[in-house]
Image (cartoon, rainbow, N blue to C red; front, side, top):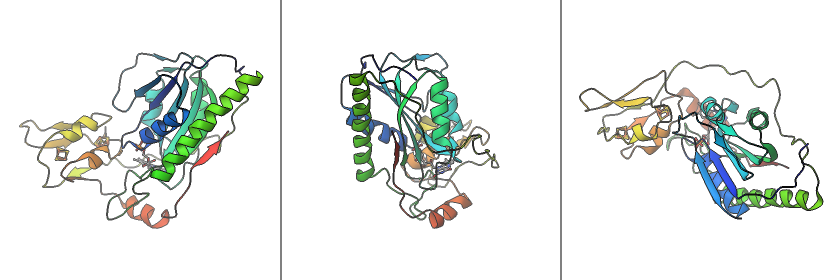
Length: 268
Ligand SMILES: Cc1cc2nc3c(=O)[nH]c(=O)nc-3n(C[C@H](O)[C@H](O)[C@H](O)COP(=O)(O)O)c2cc1C
Ligand code: SF4
Ligand code: SF4
């Protein structure tokens, strides 16, 4: 239990978000909180290891779900954070299938890093594997999701203010999920490929969180290191010529089985 007696020192949005859905939710929550200074730490392309110290900000930590767990690269990048007792709003964003143990894993990680979980939420984002032909939660978060995220930010701040006004300690936050967490089943290495439409502009190189893409020796095409690829599909979604595709059998399965709209789940 942590006593809620300190003043908040602004808001700090922290995320890992290759296809930007977690970032959009984090920013909407930040808008809902609305008060004071707002900082942003985007860990998507940031491979540094130097510590990032929190200083009493209300932190929003948002990460995508991969295989029912926190995306492994996100988990690695979060290790730099030093919570120093700062309250945190914890968010997982998933592609309308399920988030299984990801939110519990994020809560436990946040505690280990020195944060005090205040509230938590599971939101829905367009699935990384979604295509125009096989849409999976296409276009999400949409206006309704973002409105719910803003309201969640507002209610989270209200929870903090109420606790502070009454001097009530923050008790352990209960979220959905099981421990031991779902076993990760490492799939066969795979990565997106380029079609003939690729004109080697290099834009996908810029957005790859693991630096798996590089120019060929003669600079005329691009190559991908399949062992570095985390299948995040940032490169697919950013290509200005729609020349990058990730052919996975999961897209059809997800499109068929998980088309019913799921709604955000919130924990206070
Ligand atoms: C390798 C991989 C595994 C995924 N696993 C899940 C999953 O278990 N459940 C789910 O609903 N969505 C899953 N997704 C979809 C992402 O959670 C979803 O698209 C999320 O919005 C991506 O976040 P970002 O836009 O911040 O990168 C997976 C995506 C990838 C790339
Ligand atoms: S962004 Fe598209 S066109 Fe540009 S290098 Fe990558 S795949 Fe090729
Ligand atoms: S090459 Fe792999 S890791 Fe890099 S952006 Fe594309 S899908 Fe993501």
